[in-house]
Image (cartoon, rainbow, N blue to C red; front, side, top):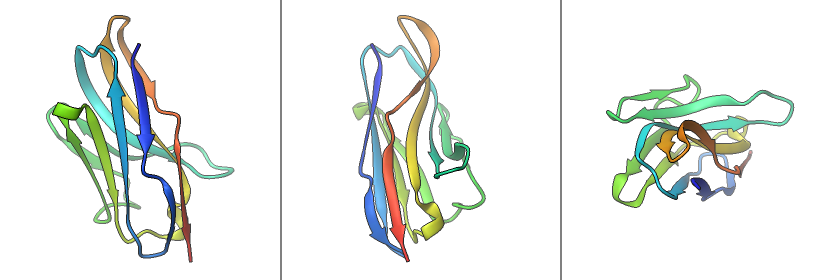
Length: 119
């Protein structure tokens, strides 16, 4: 069974940095797209950054030039480096993967990790 486990969230002051990690475990035949989404209280979940299997990236306008998505295929891990954090970045961050396993191709989500940025 495939699982995505996030780590690296926490509390930081505005202007600070955090790096989120998402490790995939289980039998994986192929990963088509990975990404990070976030959900702030009272708001819908929104895309933060994604990366395709060809390493094409896409970022929300609000995080461009501040956040960087990357991955380590050997470790089956995707990262989100977050710099120059702002209070409006406060949210629960979720890792996502579009991948194929024994059950076929599906979307998988991590459990979420809290990021809190204070002013």
